[in-house]
Image (cartoon, rainbow, N blue to C red; front, side, top):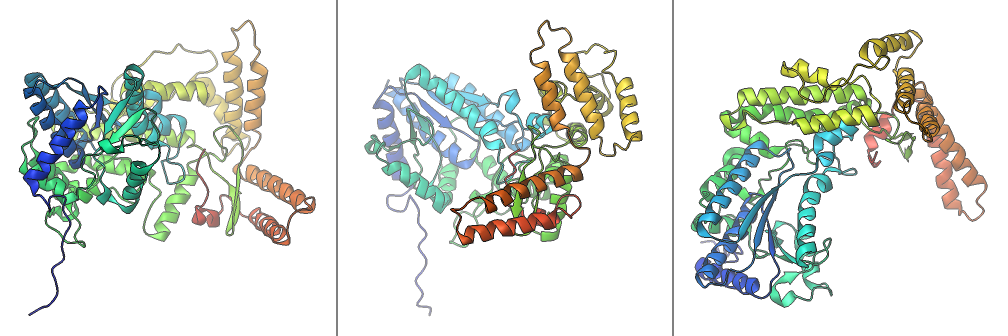
Length: 555
């Protein structure tokens, strides 16, 4: 007979049991709700944790209403990035609709809000319009724009009106060691004057308190609660569990687990374009577990088109080389930036070039057509690129990038098979496709292999045209100077040699004219000079630098 003791699995319900623990949680919520006049904001993603906290609050308000004490607003905010997994996005949207119907029937002061990013902050506007490269660890431009900004704008607006706000979140210490450390830090920080009330300070929003009613719960505690208590806005929690199960490899979703068992709670839903992970496992699992979800394959293909991650070393190098070939050798402001590693030195690539942005626009529209054709009735009108985003992309191309060919309407009509519904643009005697095509042909005949001469001439004509009807042309000279400086190179190779030689010259001056440098510092500078000297001889982007991938991709 084995003498090994069974492993005890922690549960927030272990000491008092489920019923008593929930009763105590609701009692605490009611006490906090009645303690002041500060409005509440509940962060709701449609996932298990946010569903659990909203259920607790909902049942608390039902009891308070029976006691005639339900006196202040609770705002439920859900941020739709507009590039969410569409299956999950539809789930959340339906859930919010059901909440609105139920709160009206129950006369509860719960107000659901679906928040979206401003047009200028949206994913495809920045990637296809401005040319931002797909988000990565050292240039994670998406989170602030798509997720944080919409919710923070709402919360700040509420604080401006009401003075303070309490933000209710479903964060739990069991999610990770770093999450637990962060939560405990804000619990014990000196500025947390309401620790006794179960609140914590907020690290980024002034006059906003954070309340985490299930901070001590485990994944399985959440599922046990959701499967034991009926959803109060009449949205079945069993279906939620099924969605998590469908997004888990193998379709398994155990509840009673030991430490080595991956529970259903580890499924992660997010943007279908997310390149912060090596693979979109949740969407891939959904498709693998249910052939009726094959309509999401075009979305998975879009993500793979811009992804640079791969667990296979050689495949990752291929992706990085492909990515850099799609990007301008200049930064967004036209400057050249040199990065040096022990493997090599090179210029840092900037935004996506015009040809790739146009290619990607076509692929997104093609994916939209495919999803509408293959998908269920709920996605027949799904727009990956609504008109307001198309018009903003078009504006950026025309006004900021001076890509005056105005190719967006033509790409739209080619894919969609119908007239572009955006603003009509008057025919220009010079800046029209016929004239610009002749200019492009002329430049190509004069050794403009990379199209840089054509871009330069086109930009100068566009800038001059912009100022032609102005009485005062104070900015004309500055804009022309800036454009000419950006277009000073006839090829990537020429720009690379110029930038590396300039950097080598700067380092040589520093090495020879800095008496306070230590021998170690001088040696390090000398090594960088040697690396640059070697790298100048390499053609194109340095494959060694690509492999290092140590440079920030801030453009």
